[in-house]
Length: 408
Image (cartoon, rainbow, N blue to C red; front, side):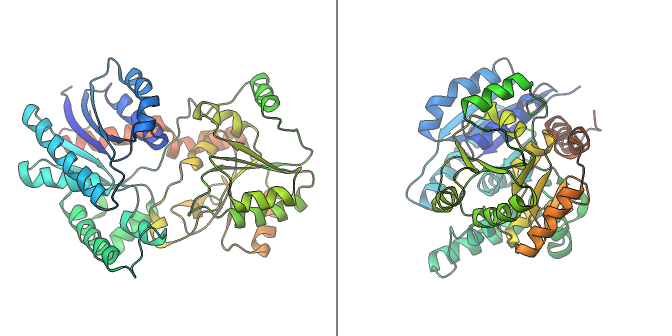
């Protein structure tokens, strides 16, 4: 089998949670299959200091050459341009010294550097979108179109988005919803777009021994309840509809008396504190739990909830927590209008609420009570779409097709 040499550019750091779970495992596995990587990442100093040794240990002995660059935080906008320039300079250096077959660009900033090399050296590139980036900034209120500077920046990136979609050799989308939108509205050929959602490592998110689960429960003072345990894992930031999730729990606890709502989050906010005061014996907050313990956290859950702000950009969103919950056999409760989450109920992986109303919540809870979900069945069937090993294989096919060889 011939080898492939790939520059992989990630604006996320390998010492960040996203890089650690959604980039490194892929590169580590693909590098065992005659693929040599030149990995460029942008690391935040505090996380790099604590995480560098772990990353280097993971890559030891593999054909992966890691080039960690310092992430520039300020000033806004200009800092991104500074980092883009760093990408281009390093890409040019790597290309001078090696015979690079193509560049794998993760998200838009990385893709701009990849397109630059395509223009300079005719090197093909993969545009791994990870979402509609510019629109996410508008929908998430990071940029305001009322501000003339952000309006110019938004228009710049929307123009570049068209160029990236046109000039890339392959496009990777996280969702079928985004793929269908691009085919129908942007005239992108369907054969150019590959759908590969955010994956979970099913070997890591696997059944835990009862004794270890019990030890974790005692350590964190998590009671055994007569009802059900509703679980939320993730951020308390802009995209996550905490108030609506608590409203859902208010209905849920009536359907399933004696329940509790466990939140595994990085930080609390006013909504969380208000609910703790309202239900002091039912709302439990776990903070800063390491990834190694996440299978234990999910082992406590009867259901996993994820309400995400529906917006145009969220057509392209694939929550990491979805694959992790399904890997543990935990049925999910989600809202429609976000990526492919609207299909969850049809796939018998949980229930979907079409509107965030009490009537919808009540109907969803009744469907939960009437449905006898099988954890092994959820895990086995969801693996076809969300298991890391299967998604590695999808990328392998993309790589060898782009190389121009038949699938090896």
